[in-house]
Amino acid sequence: MIPVPIQDFLSGVIVPVNLYVKLNDNKFILVSKAGNKTNREQIKTYEDKTVEYLWVKRADYALFARNNMTIAGVIVTQNNLNVSQKSQVLGQAASTVFLELEHAGMGFETYSHSKQIVEATVALTENHRDLSDLLLGLKECSDELLRHSLAVSYVSILIAHTLGWENKQTLEKLTLGALLHDIGLKVLPPDIIAKPKGRMTYEENLQYEQHPYKGMQMLLSLGIVPDDVIAIVYEHHENAIGQGYPRKLRNIKIHPLAKVVALADEFCNLTMKNPNCPVPKSPREALLTIEHTMGQPHNKEAFRALQLVVNKEFARSA
Ligand SMILES: [Fe+2]
Ligand SMILES: [Fe+2]
Image 1 (cartoon, protein in one colour):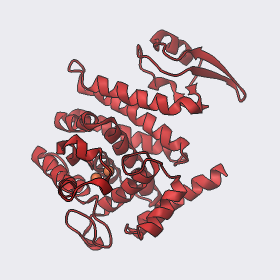
Image 2 (cartoon, helix red, strand yellow; image 1 turned 90 degrees about the horizontal axis):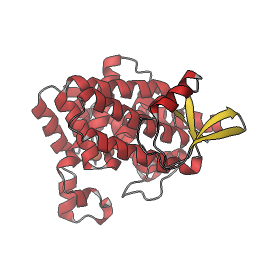
Image 3 (cartoon, rainbow, N blue to C red; image 1 turned 30 degrees about the vertical axis):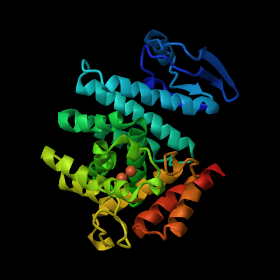
Image 4 (cartoon, helix red, strand yellow; image 1 turned 180 degrees about the vertical axis):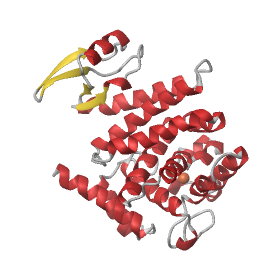
């Protein structure tokens, strides 16, 4: 069974899975059947009884997570909601992605820390209408892109935390850069985004590899996005051996925050389903692939930090 924080349940939406309340370690009671609408009054009754989580069967969790993203998508496109309400919805979508990663064996200890930072960053976009529209643009592009962007933010923060980075502004820039790293995909034709890279024509690939540049231009045009965030977006596909794109930068020239996001991006691409990876790898397999197949083209310190995170989780769950 998988716990979902009770405050993450929006009122009046249909939940496609059974929901349970936990009585003790072995006993759960069914409180809402699949297909029922959630009811705020009912949820409040549980909260009053200090119930912190509702529980979902492990086999149902993927369906539940996908449904949450769909709800977030419907809600953020409503014009009658203000930016603050939309941010709240994005925060909830973020929680779902983090829970999903946590249950895939990622970063339990730092979970609440990372979640707080990402949610704070989502909330930060409240003050900047343009930024919040950009973030919502990820969702318009595809559910998968928003899910991927939230996951990359989360893993970036896990790496930064393990590296001992504590400066709040640095962490906020890292989170925002990671959330927006693929924003340039928004201006590409959807059929290119949905294609595995290996099946793209030469021209399609050239177009695809422009997305860091397009993203950089979009953010520059807003005039309010910090340079460090723009560098993350522009450089997230560069790698330490100078074979990345779009500029084939060498390690020393790549922004330190971009190196962390580049690694988190690869890791998420290997561990979460996407057109290039129909069968996701476990966190440990993903590390081996990055280390051996890709020749560890990432920043070594960041890579070691990610190894530490994954091995710690593996040791904990073994
Ligand atoms: Fe990208
Ligand atoms: Fe990405």
